[in-house]
Image (cartoon, rainbow, N blue to C red; front, side, top):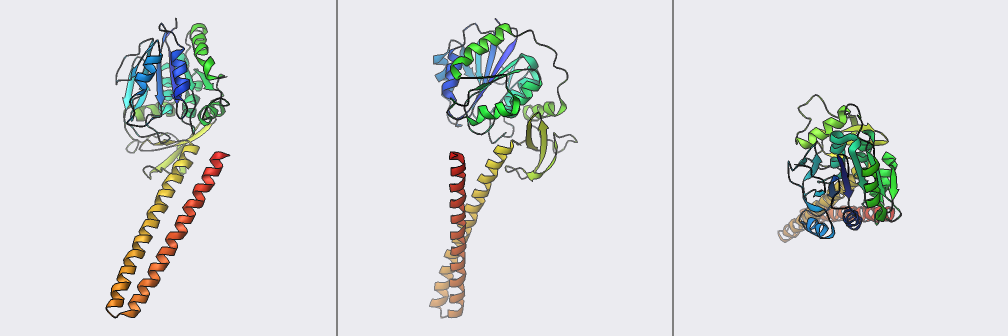
Length: 336
């Protein structure tokens, strides 16, 4: 069965159950290697064992340089990007993409570069839009895209983003995806020449695989934008690919517009909390100085310290109200 295909899968919140169903529905003699990225806590290493119990395939954490073997499922270990070359898996500690390491986009993009039309990509339940840009790369290189039906996904954002960005070939309930993957492997014609790899795509894969930045290089993907990276404060370059616009800094952090906006909000909130704390500390110190000045008979200085303390406390209260209002607005938008 099969002709050198690989299956790449991305999942996040709500994605463990459909991922389990997918792997459990594939036969032991599967003629393809499956590679999967799941967003999970860095200290949670139980997923390979959980999936292995439910599967007729061998499920294990990917190792750097591990050969691709049919009938095997390789999972990205926590905190490491998973990439694929022509005949092996590769791990990287390169910069996060969309705030994640491992990131689905990294795996998908590397598969598109190395395997072009032999790739079958699946995006399952998850929040935000990791996987959408990677799916664009796979579709540009002639691979096949599958998205879990957003209407049945616990978190519809990831599969919907892939559908919107890449016009995926198939949108299916999770229960039907295993049979679809088997059908595609069995009936898909032999791989065709997808032409040369687009230079920006190749550069991005190389940046992650070699864990190098473009700071000292004359080449970097994209055109300068008006934004800065929320992780390192470096300039962001805008990349237009298919129906997707996204951003990458010269260090290598990469962002979709949605993930960039989300991270900007997080950074802004952290800065506001820091400002509130600094103002409250300022108020506490001036109150102490005011008491000491009053005890020493310096009543003018005491009044000055009390006024500045109250002003600092009032400013801190304004910032706290601003954080609360922003948080409430964001929660309401998420609920909508």
